[in-house]
Image 1 (cartoon, rainbow, N blue to C red):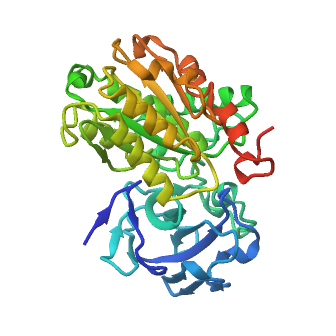
Image 2 (cartoon, rainbow, N blue to C red):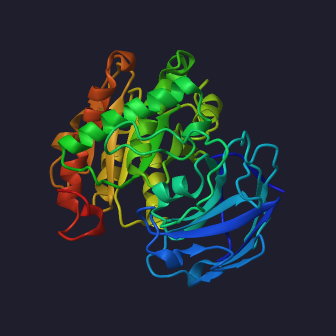
Length: 416
């Protein structure tokens, strides 16, 4: 039986989902909009209100019919709290089981202690499909902390606890919010994440895009010439430094990832909670599963195919790291022209001090209605500040978003 860890996800192969929780807990479900907030009191399913459209609570089990959720519903969050009033999760074991047609998946949150409420998992829409993600985020200040994140209007019991545990840290800057899974990161990596999210927020403010929401995709060059870059940790640091972009603009705070070698191969999704493990698995050394030469055309077509099969009403930003030496300049150009009409912006980032061929000409390609590409090269990634890196990553993307989408499109909501 598959077991998820914090930040891990799995597809839901049926619209009829059963979620059961084992342990001495009360279970609550929250139905959320795309902005991560409830629409009203009816979106909270608990023992005093055991049903809502598409969701029914029976003891510590939830029956969820995804096709029956209210209009606008984009996510269902499963929450647990100790049965005993005022109790914490210290010494309490909780296990979640999700059944949706295929093999069940299970999840047990780790390192819970003083928390009085925990978000166990979330069922979320990704394109036309649904997935489940293990969360394990606890709140030491009970339902009040939960309300802050999800917009729930909850009256806590008047009884005062014997000793109040410290609440989760407040967001580090205006426009920067807590990212699910960041509490699982090593302290130094978490600190860098939040500082970098601030830098991303500053750049978005500069471009009048503070409300931007988009899907972020990372493509990593794994051709044979990149071996030295992987050994020196360049690609590891590159992934860690672009993760805050997704944390700031992707509601799921995740990135889809591809390896580009002689063929294109989609890798596991990158989530904030599993970032160290992902980096260790895929960038500690060169990934060899995709072959040892460059096939930019295959990577472009594979990513574009994924976007087409998983449509969203927000744009996709592709961050394509390349060490140079384009194998097929003509095929690469034709592939990019073929996807010009798709809701995807391709930002190529050179990190190899090499001949980038057609990539250097992307900003001057003629005959396109939408300039769907950008390129810049970094002689030394480590000598570029976060502020400069994010400014260059997001330099051309805002103009493309505004030119690609018609006025009133959902992708432009929250942009000035």
